[in-house]
Length: 116
Image (cartoon, rainbow, N blue to C red):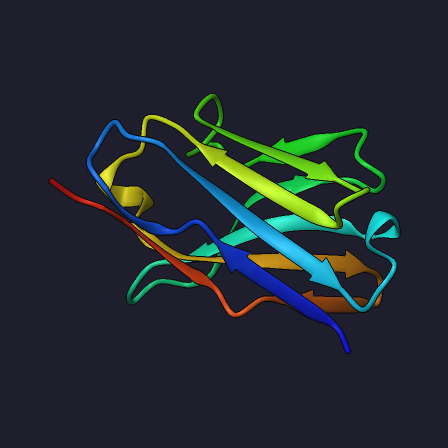
């Protein structure tokens, strides 16, 4: 049974930091590219960051470059998103995604709210 379980979301003040984790099981984690997406209320889901399999390269949305860092630990079947200098516009539900074309898996999402 495939599972992607996100954790680490919450309420943080502007300028603060959060670290999201996504624990994977039920598939060959190291052979999948892993991504974080987010969806704000009334907006489409957008790609935030991607890390290749097994972890040699990363890509980021322009809006988070220099503030967010994606990483993975293939021994723990876990992908992380370190989010620094958070802004109110980062408020969204953050989703973990695993992809090895044509297969994609999604997590259930974790809420991140940036507010004073």
